[in-house]
Length: 367
Image 1 (spheres, rainbow, N blue to C red):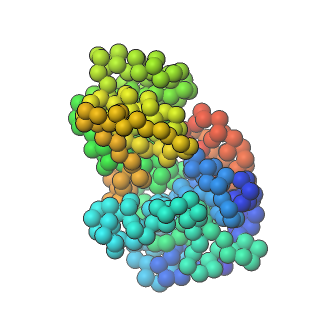
Image 2: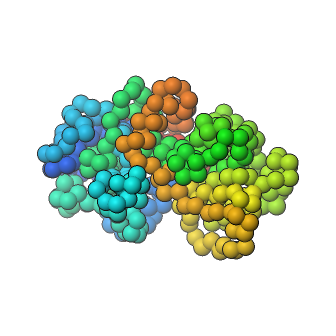
Image 3: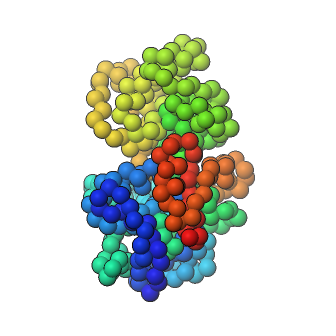
């Protein structure tokens, strides 16, 4: 039994920090000492929607402290990062290299199922079992997770960098490589240069896209975009002006690929209208609010694809990402722009909401 502090939803749209108890891992479970946890916009959004108390956080990396019966992919002392796909590896989708669509993923069934409990009373708060966000709950010193959520780190990488691979890097890079399967020499527009958008840019650069246009409302983000692969940047002030600038850059054409990374439904018209005939619009950000779609926008061979978790199979793609990092072809360290101790979660949250940082990370070992 381990006692530790954790950041939890209060079921009222806010959070609090208090002690939790983690019981030893049972069959196919792993206890991880979390060294660093990324703070994602989804943590904030789901905190607002939480109906019960639960441990926040779904980007984490650390060291295996204990394993339950049947665990064979890691051992005590291994450095690991966590993924929130938690594929069963047995269903039709998993066996078809579509682990991101695993039939057992609770998050496919609704917001209320994004918070999952261990199969037993594994995590307690004031003697009551509580949930973990996306089955992880990384905003604590320790996390009790399923073995399928754990991927071994086989290279030298800071935990602060490794932790963001499980969501921001995987989703952004995978949306280009796995979902869009971008062609060499193509043109692309990326709407929203946050933690995911930055990795879309890197995926496009690695895929040898010829023209990569970054669009954001924040000039500071656009300066960063140039360092991560953007060939051109546009400060978005209104749809008509941004469309005109995109067509100017592309000599009268629109983009072969458009990646909408903000989840802001008001940007959907811009995303469709900046996609070239025969092109592909990839919805990377989870849309919030109503988004009326004119089906005429899909004329002339355009396609609209939702990218769920970057179309990734964690066991396969974590290794690919770590290899690219080791070869210095994928920049991850530079994405961590601020770090805070766990007890300064409010400051970290404020930094996230200001929108100037790529990724804010919590040092879960520091109070």
